[in-house]
Image (spheres, one colour):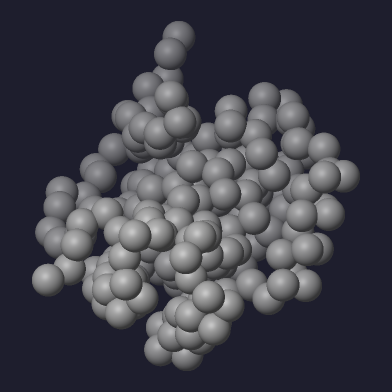
Length: 212
């Protein structure tokens, strides 16, 4: 029987941290990881696994879990040298502050599956963002159409960044190190423009209202 809350996924600027409680047998941990990934595969689209934290895992067990994610589920698991490079970059890079007025990149047309846009500022898409496409921005992300791919705003640490779209229905949405995803199963699709922002370390989605 699978135990609850053995594993937690935590989003950070550098990638997803997998935090595992130490009191469980390795086979239980492995079974739980498989079960959790199977249920939430859309959560991992375009994401990277930064590291696995567990005090009781051996190096070989940790490597086995990393190999499982990389080979069976095609999830990008960062190598030690990649983690070290990200740690160094984080210590020297300033957080982008131009979410009110700052440099902005405009994308003409729809982003299709496999396309990735990364920009050290705000991004405005004059079209749709299809499933399988990804946008990473240091500032805000605004989509003048349907957002159904992956969006990561405030990517280098700005918690004041936001994500807005005429139809906000992403497979994964992240603001700074706070991450959320579309609910499982059938749910009512958005019919009005919506805005996502961080409040109290959680992503809140609300109707976009033009306040006069």
